[in-house]
Image: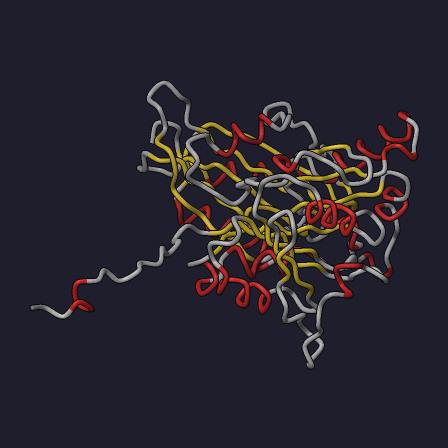
Length: 366
């Protein structure tokens, strides 16, 4: 007679291998980031979201129920809230909190990370975008920037000493989704002025207007801003957001010392090696000058490129000095092969950017 313990089937514990999307929530002080995240933490939305909060407000009921780690860098307790969300607070860039959170896999489907009001989201985004260790478990879904409709223009127009790009502009420039909050506090004419200024900085991101940071969560989840293989081409996605590539909408046709968007689309192909040199000169060597002999500063770059002797589109992306490229969908036989580039940065000169690229291109039939 066999041992009954051998006949019993062991209890199998399902292991989730699906990568978890991380969305970075940024915005200037007082814009409504924490209001947005507290709304997510208390609203019934039937989604399992882990929220990593920064800068808790005084007297927060959630904060009072947490215990601070002795080092002061992490609230060790992940609270499970009534609506199914998880919550903790950090005083660093959130990496430790996410490593701690991954031990609770299966209890959440999304991660939202709040940054400090003065943070440049670029370096934080790079941690989650191309980090090999974290990359096996999570992926960067996108950057959401909250802008105060009443005071946001004041922050965006602030001139910093030594010509440094101010924090509010950087946050807007790097955003995949821009929430213009507190629209009930301004009239329509002023609101248009705010949104027009935002569009002049960043024509790539989707813009949503909100009151008290309340919105359909579908707007901020599953952005897939850094995904390459989605079936729909990257340029089609940009056109869906209202960016007119061919007419150069949002482009600076003159040299603008402020942060602006520049786009161009050229027919033909380019060699991978020439494309690499073009991008590296812009974001690494920083030796590309405009017609006033000023160095162009690239904050964000996206492109859909036709590579010589390759049947697939190449999607390139860069944030600050970090860039990545992936081959995606096949060029259809009926589609004219093109190279499309979108830049967000300062001292941009559309003529120089486009002409330099054009000189590197191969014959269209290549």
